[in-house]
Length: 398
Image 1 (cartoon, helix red, strand yellow):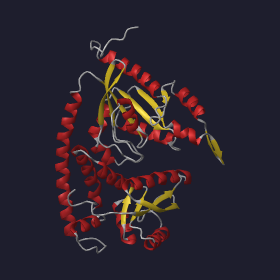
Image 2 (cartoon, helix red, strand yellow; image 1 turned 90 degrees about the horizontal axis):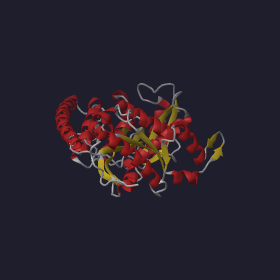
Image 3 (cartoon, helix red, strand yellow; image 1 turned 30 degrees about the horizontal axis):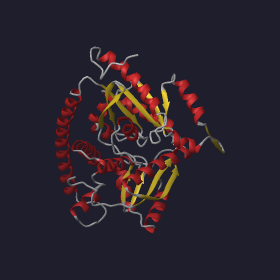
Image 4 (cartoon, one colour; image 1 turned 120 degrees about the vertical axis):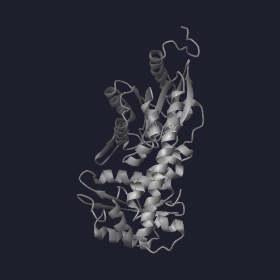
């Protein structure tokens, strides 16, 4: 990927760092760091230890306090750690200061997500989107990201920053690349819009949800086709569109990139055409992993992102997936924490949403037939309104 690239960097062991604030309670930070650890695992890095610190606001110079950073440095040196990952985004000056003190690869949450996207991108479209987002993120941080450049050039690893001339040259190269990539993306977006317009008289349904909730597995079950699905974050980057036939109605279903808390702004911008699949859909199927302890937060994050891309005004089916896993966990009480049973949850959510939600297991195919029936009715409603003179595959007879 050109001059700035981490292909030559193969981090293996990491520590992760987060701060406890009034907004981020110890329980919340545990959940956030669990997710960060899963992100690191998806990237191919093993998390050896977590560091947290209680602060009102992040330290403007080093994110955590000097004492905690020294503690991290001691651990890093003693345990052969090559990467330190911060749960929040670091400013260019924080990144530079931390890199100087710790002398290892520093990633913040956004850069880690960008790195994963880069690993996962398959088509030239996704690769262009990720490359643009990554360069835009790295541009203001170039003074600190020089290690990527040094290793790429095979230069000496004299930490402390390469010459200003080199940095300025790199900035110029990156600005040129950004403008070239923007042009490329504009052309691709235009092409994608034409493709979407050429899909004929078919209703479009889009699967949306937090990353790793089982959208691709559900897509495989409903469309009887093979879409890459595995237990990792961002297994799907390129939108997959399949033709699905329910009873007598054919329609299109797209499996979109998973959303995540604090999705880097650059990615939302770059993945515009991917998110257009959602924006231009007639029906949104919002999939939630009910077995995840933070499923309500995930549900809210997805709704926020849908609001950001102006896609909240559509008929929406809420599908709670992985009920088989939830059943295994059961309802239990653990000190202050009490987990409702699946029946209690069903009762609450169905009451709140006027029964517009379903509880399924895509993996075990539990209640999938029920989902097909509900989807058929929703698609039929839209189809009749949108294409009143369009024949179905065959007419149903009573």
